[in-house]
Every structure is written in structure tokens, then in C-alpha cells.
Length: 105
Image 1 (tube, one colour):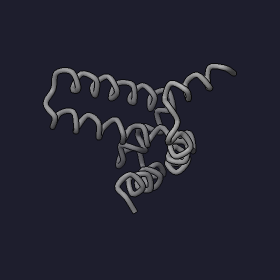
Image 2 (cartoon, rainbow, N blue to C red):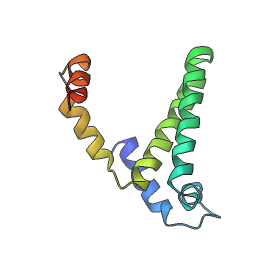
Image 3 (cartoon, rainbow, N blue to C red):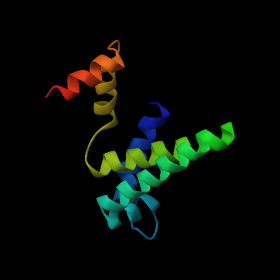
Image 4 (cartoon, rainbow, N blue to C red):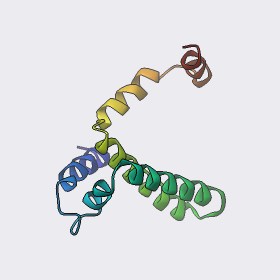
């Protein structure tokens, strides 16, 4: 089991905990808008670290971003495996071609 899969399982487990004892449970108690807001904040902090921080700061912010993305996915009942399957489906496809195919709907 890899790190992200273990983290996904931990997040799912902690969602049911008391909000007084678990950050994940506290975020979930505040609802999806708060979880999404937190993900956005972490994305912004990651961009700032990429532009003006050290490699270590960027790694820390990227870890926070991945964590909060997994919390959001869990809250929406989307499995990491589904995200990875989508990435696998896109593998070998030009990013430009893939984007063009999505906009032709």
C-alpha cells in the first residue's frame, strides 16, 4: 500500500471521529464548502511557495495540498483509485488533444 492510499484510508477512518479529536472530522463537520475553501487556500500557498519559497517549503505546501484534496475527494465519495484510473486513461494522450476533446462537448 502506498502513501496516498494509506492516507486515503486514514482520512476515511477519521471522518467518523469526533470533531474535537480529529481535524478531518472537524473539516467534514463544517461541510463541503469549507473543505473546498481550504483546498483553495492550500493551492494558493503551493503556488506562492513554487514562485518564492524553498524546495522544502514547496514540498510541505504540496503535501498539504494533496492531503486536502484527499479530504475533498473523500467528502464527495470519490476514490483515489478513480482519479488514478482517469490519469491512466489519459496516459499517452497529448495534453492539448485531451483538452480539445473535452471542449468539443
